[in-house]
Length: 392
Image (cartoon, rainbow, N blue to C red; front, side, top):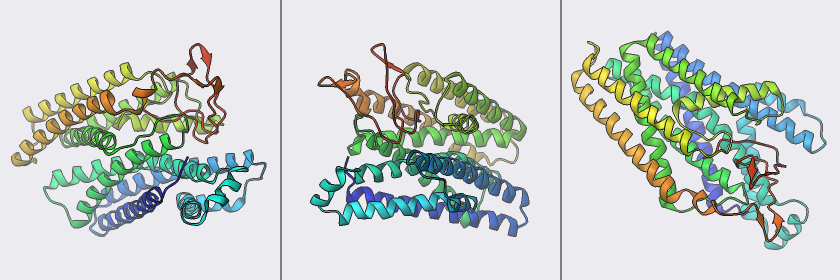
């Protein structure tokens, strides 16, 4: 494992995007309240609180687990920091501090001495991977609903102020960045997994996620414009199905039942927007079913909206939105096929045995990787902190 200057710069860029995203969300909510749009302001704040509270819960739980594993008692200041919504900033500070040390200060001689006790690169990479997971949670719990809300307001009124335009652009950047960054960080933290390296795989994965998410969100906005109650019912129904899928797969991500229950709720929420492998199984069949249903539902919504457009909706927007949805869906599926057919790192791992030169592969990273429960009929040993993770 190596942590390069490029990785450090990406971490700096990540916290800049995080701060900008948070600032724009606060700006939009204040603007709504100032203009007397209390419902939109309350919904915006609710999305922010829901996302950040869930993230703080997981962050504190992981800190407690790390301290317990190290034989230390839980520190009260950590609980206070997370109550003040400072858990993610604390993790960013620690990651930046350690990342700067291993990137710019450690000499090769120092590294060799340190590796006899603890690998400083691995410690930094594990911390960055934790951050990537937390950012992924917050992105889908807060960023995706926020983007749908801003698009709904824009399409309903036909215009938006500068803060709403900023919120739409920043949300798109945050969602795209966190999704790709998570996939890169997770694979980098697993020494026995191939990296998501090269520009083409990253670009294909980015476009696959971006276009499928865009088409689905615009479809959801169309349904909101037709009937808010039906749209909320569909969303809750899909969320319920996602939670049931997580329970069916019997995920074992957290050490406590309460946190595991929260994790499955979060997984169900994420599955409303995009597909993730939640237990390391062969995902060819589930993913095919997921996106087949996605295509049918999206096309159905477009047809219904075209046949029965709401009277308040501008006909010029109707053509543009429908073309955007259809084109985004088509491009998203094309990039999905291209990525999994040509660029997915596991393509070269399909025939890789679980042992190398007769020795078991050591997987003691903090992220409990996503592999099937058995390899060649033998249980896979998972001796790292996070047993199961979202990984495709």
